[in-house]
Length: 427
Image (cartoon, rainbow, N blue to C red; front, side):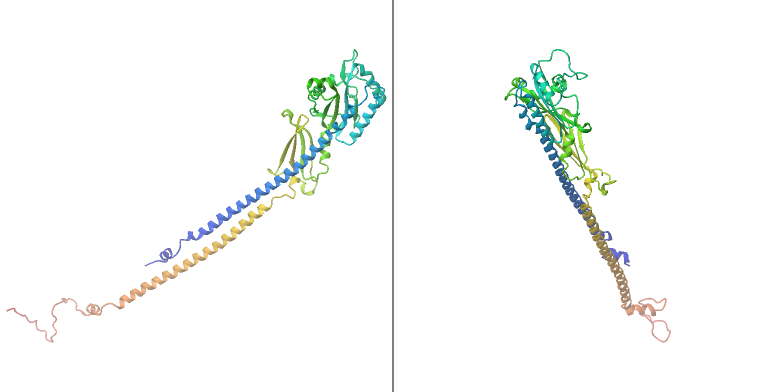
């Protein structure tokens, strides 16, 4: 007899086969959702990086322009120091007064420049004329002096020639510079020699400027002034007329350069990497003071950086920028997550539909198996009934009327008397 389970196994698809389409749908849906998420996330990250790089480049460009504009003051006033009467002529004091006025006017147009100093080459026979002109114009107590511990005049014979800090105009009053013989200062003279022999503007190492507020770090720029147009080192040393010195406050330059740029949460700082020292010269913080940024922590991996290198009169400057938590306000990367959640939701909906279809198919298979099992049982019963009704009648009668003990095939005595059977003899 065929059971229901046998009929079900013969007439239906295996149950686990019904779940294969659902499993394939879930795997493909999840894979496609994750792939779309990473593609959107990567695109959004690249877009944010490009935006940050563009904002950082704008700041680097503004800082570079401001520094170049401040240093350009050297080129504007250097010619004024080359055309003038000799120190021993009567018009020399008036010439010194006009130079002071020119420097003061130019200083007011360049806030980052803290001081401008004229360092002329003074021979021994010109010392008295330079002192008299300075006393008549800006300092009644002016005196040429050589550097020592007390910064006073050294007794004895004056040197053959000196390079004197002469006309010095500073934004804030400072002392100890006017009249100082810089050729006797080993640090100052090393920079002056390099500028003199190359004929180029040279910048000192980062130093704390006495003329700058709060002791900001800055640079001292030296531009050599020559008589004529020397072409080699020997002629430059012979024709050197002096130097023009500018004290440049980098912090002020950066602050003024970024003043007109809206803050977007990007910190900028300038460091001197000459010789691999990486000395931070100044740092500008550009943070948004909005309520959204209060207490917001910088997420790991969300910090963006950009670096630019520039040559600054023989020094290597690094301009760096870094994102802050304020930069990410309004830049939350939510689109990829929406795509991922939407893709997974659609996958779950499709999987649910496929599961319902599989459950219905399994139920149909079970109903078919039940019906088939019942049909098989009915068919077998009908076959048994049919066999019973179609059996031969003689077989049935012989089975029911034959006396017990009779021999099948022997002659039967049908007479009324009970006489013994007749015996036949063979002739």
